[in-house]
Length: 314
Image 1 (cartoon, rainbow, N blue to C red):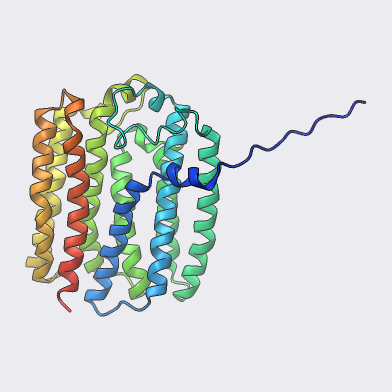
Image 2: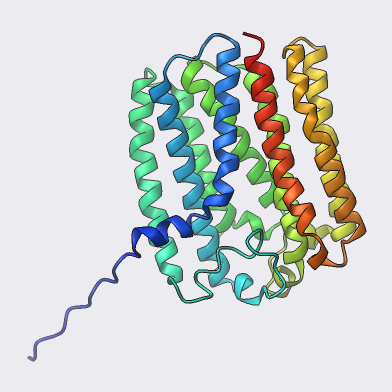
């Protein structure tokens, strides 16, 4: 028998590519979600550890990065990103690193698994440091599960018109989880501030679906925008924006949140201008760049200003 050449395992991409694969510009929203959760704990006098806060932020960013890579992997396999020639980069169409030949789709998958493994191990340590709180483990597992089922078959929620719901739930968990790590127990206040922020993050994904709709539909990826059409999707966007800000005012009226939480209403004009642009240019995706920027700005401003309002109660 002749000697057989052993198959050589492909090398992982250089770490600098890992950073670009993570799509770092989008990770900012996750960091803001953590800040909002920690501000909720601080407002109740329950912020206990800066070290745990740092670990929470790092784990949340790693989980988001892994989800981005799984999304790039899935959209490379299903052909959505290759078919997307009208996307408004860098806001839509993925990182484009697979399409430009910088990494292989399997690289995205392998690095995502490495990050998820690290998050799982560190999450167990974090749960141990918080007294083996069951909710910490549940929130962490739920976040990992949502990051997986959003993109990956057999569920692939992004292709079933449920991706926006999954994203909203995931970023709500970021806020509640960051609060819980500090407070050590579930808080209605944290859930109240998380709900509006989660709705505005879901709106980011809805807005991004407008320029991607033709290519998504071509490969059978039935996002919310594809299912509803652009005009009805714009109405959903408006409904979520109004609900997010109206609910915040209601929580203040019910004395769940302090009056300074109303600072979070500063993001409403950004959302309204964004939806006006989506409605006006729904059939002209190349004119939607400002709308997408405003959607990201609305979620970011809402989270940061609301966090400042919560901390101002101290």
